Length: 239
Image (cartoon, rainbow, N blue to C red; front, side, top):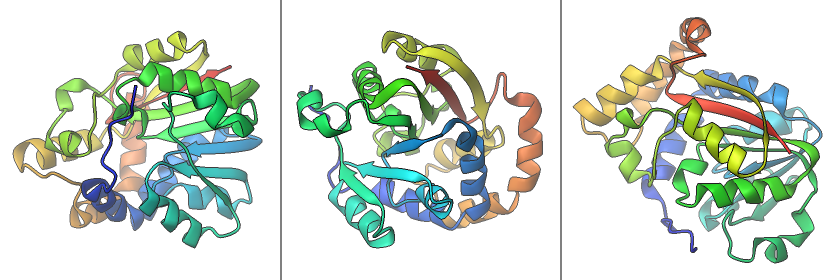
């Protein structure tokens, strides 16, 4: 199946650029996934490096990847000493095309990527192929289909997820489930107001800047909700 995507993703780029300066939010996301990312690490869908930079600052053994040429160029410019590769997670001849990467990684993570891929089970199967035995996949995706709005549509999101639906694709791809939890509870009203009530098609820089200032409070609010509520859901699985 061919991966249908926007070669020049103006809405996605605008959203990524809005989030770039949200340092407290980006650091929160990094700190949330970092404990599960060990050894040789591959990031799927690095975008313009909003999370990548924190790994690189720690001198992690990183490979960055994306599918779009403008994102790849931005990554190469920003991180000239880090390996950056073009990778299509559902390429029809994945094992041959990316033979040098098969079984090479201790950790593969993808943040806000899998929801863009119609054949998400095949994407997870290919992530499995990239991992060493015992390696971990860390996946973050948007949560709750009821929150699907104009921003999701413009960003080419096929769907949003729950604990159950995200776990299902891990199981279908032969992962052993390790951990699942929701993330960013206070993002829900912000997403609803922006995408549903105000009809925004992208995440706006001014709104993201305001949200970023509140992250220390939002992190505390998140603690009791991890088991059942959040704008995103995170699952960790082992090969």
